[in-house]
Length: 322
Image 1 (tube, rainbow, N blue to C red):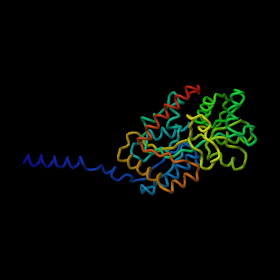
Image 2: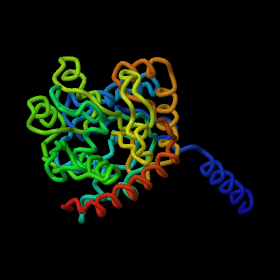
Image 3: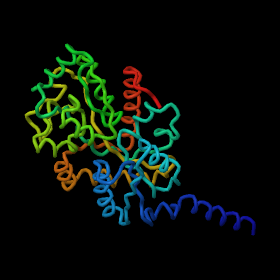
C-alpha cells in the first residue's frame, strides 16, 4: 500500500511543479493602471494615453491612465515602486523619475533601478534651442559667440532641471557662460522667451510649435543627432561641431520590481509590437516624436548609463541637489 501511495503523491507533486500558476496564465484578468507623473495634456500624458489605448487592444482588458503629478515625479514613481508586483500598476516615465532624480536628490525615497523593472523604452521628444523672434542672433553660433564674449550677460530660461542640465552642458561645450532663470515648466519659459524676458530657451519641440507657427520665436538648432523632419533647414548642435551633445525627453514603461517574468514578458512583447506598427509611426510623426525602441534589457542598460551621465553633469556644473 505504501509504495503505490508514494508513487501517486510523487506524480501529483510533479504535476503541480510544471503546471502554470493560474494568475499568471490568465494575465491580465482585470484592468491595468498606468501612472503618469505629469498633468493631463502634457507630452508625457499624450503619449501615455495613446499607449494605453493600444495596449487595451493587445491585452484585451481596460488600461486606465491615472495622473499623479507633483514632487518632481517622485509621488508617481514611489506609488508604483511600492505597488504589488503583479503587473496591474505600471509607470509611464520620462527622464525625471527614471534617471534625473537620482542625480538631483540626496535622499530619494525610491531607487529607480532596484525598485522598478524596465519593460520597454518607446520614444523621445526632441528638444530645440529657441530665441525670441526679434533676437539679434540669427544663428546658433552667433548666440554661442555672444556667450563667450559677454559671459554672464546672456540669460536662458529653464523649465526643469533636465533643461538646465542641457543648458549648462551646452555652455560647457561651446566655452560660453549664461545665467539660468528657472521656471515651473517649459510653457512659462517659452512664454517669457516670446516676450523677450530671456535670451534663449532649450525646450521640447512639441511644446514650442504654436509659438513657432505664430512667428513669436525662432529655432536655431536641434538637440538630437539628426535634423527634425518638421524643421529640415535647422541644423543640429552636433552638426555645428559639438559632437557629444544629445539631449531629449525620452519615455518608457516600468513595472514594480519582482513582477513575475511571465507578466513582464507579456507586457514587453505587447509594447514592442505596438511601437513597431504603422499606426504608431503615424502617431509619432504627427506628434513630432521619434521612435526610440528598446526591449526591457536594453532599456535597463540605457537607464543605468543615463543615471551615470546625468549624475556626472550635475556634479560638474554644481547644480544644487535637494
